[in-house]
Length: 133
Length: 133
DNA sequence: GTATCTGCAAAACATTTGCAATTCT
DNA sequence: AGAATTGCAAATGTTTTGCAGATAC
Image (tube, rainbow over all chains, first blue to last red; front, side):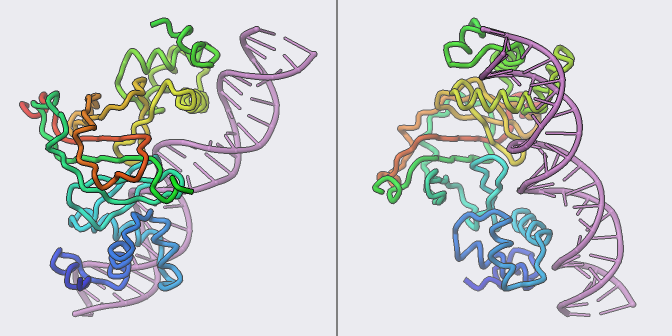
């Protein structure tokens, strides 16, 4: 993926900070918090501020190239995947993985008269590695 | 439901504040935030503090008689229902309703090697009332 | 009388806002 | 130069913590 082009295609001017932040999101796929992004990129971009990380992620979400993940209280995380999917979080090692979901099979008869615009599915448990330790 | 007995059965000493807070949760079923609980009960319990609401809800969650609901960022909500279920939130009127879910029908083949302990399903859209306005 | 519970005040975080400095074209 | 972007500092809002006073058994 050519990140500057991808940003431009989505009406985002590809500044140095924006390129680096999206690159981090897209390459790591680790559902980072603002704080983690800041800590990881600060050595490389010494003048970086958290405000810019906040501004940039807000812009990415508004332009539809990033989604937010709120699994647990007071930590918003960010994901370069925007298609409908779920998340599994291991409560031992903290790793979060994306999971495909077949929403049509969910029994939602009770909700026939509503319109559903967003679906968040978060599963919490122990991952394979932590189970076999 | 006899709330003092229910608290005692769950190893929670039934103080006046605890009874009132659980009563509110159980009767209203409105998935309130700490702030809302505080605002609703403060007139009735003039000395009530938010710290006590926080302490009490933490105790309820620890003892397993209350669950937390984090649908959107920076607002933790509380629910007197602790069994597996989902939530639908209307993004117009803000109402949150509990929904039964048939998790077995979810296609989770990708997760065969993990153990799942908690399942959060949050749907966001427009409720019947707000759709027909 | 000793444990526990409550609630004030302050601290700790995450996030937002106002605005001035910087950068880009 | 002019417009957009960045980043500092302060404000906001939520939750946690330390501790002293109140309450319960």
